[in-house]
Length: 382
Image (cartoon, rainbow, N blue to C red; front, side, top):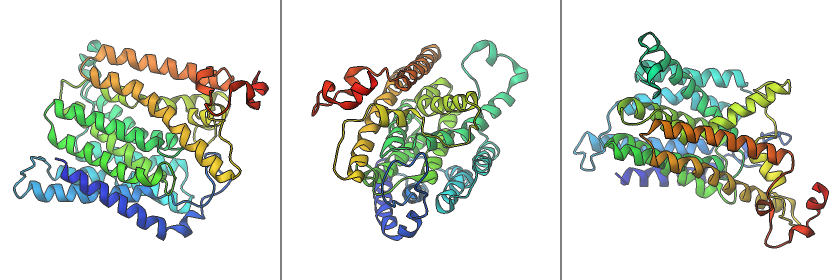
């Protein structure tokens, strides 16, 4: 099972290296006044191409093995190719936006929705239940409710990953953690084919991560974010659909960080009279960057920004583990998963409001190189 992952990792790593050299002109097209821009210099934003190449190479090698001897018992079939074709509109839309910076939010959503519709139509994807008995037992709701949930999840999760893709290694590590958690549960229910796909996703992301963190030599871009979102959304729904023992709330808790970040961002923009599709600099990772990770000072502005950038991501990695660990432990117990989803939503909202109001706990702001009382920002906040 591991050799396709080796292929995915090295192909992704090597293609990232090639893109860094070949995409310098593309890197200059990214506007320097974007609110989500947190780096200096011109850096390629097409790392998603490398990950797609790594995943594609590994899947092709796995299919060749499966149809010859399948000694590794990968259990892959041609449905995996259909899965990949379904993702093409979303991933291609992200790539077009990375290359041109001219694709509107509406068009990108239509393309991710097209991928969701193809997955529902060609793969027969739908959510078979939601784990709440009195709703699951209403025959007139199904399968239409399950199809609607699948469409919403597959069309929306790519945009959720795009929102959290703001700092070196942030979205990539979240995708790796979630993919490994899905791999674990796939093995628990003896679904080797799904486990292989999730492992390949994690491996290809790992090849990209070596270039992205900590030096930020290449970014995933919309293409990479939409790739992560599409693979994990389709895979999550398929896992629940194929195995009744897997609670539908398991993938929800796994992905609650990007999902709740998106829903909360849409609400606060709407509450302030703005459009949910307009980018801003008020996401929780951006607030952590500006109001918690402050104690990095360097004579060179680019190095100072890079150091603060790198120190932001681990905060959110730990945040992700708060949901992944209980999800892995209670993947078949719906009521526990629902409680953790509600708990995370409240914790996120409390943390966001605390940061926005400058009420950050001291232990989160402390810098071992400089005492709290000596930092000018503390005096200003007080």
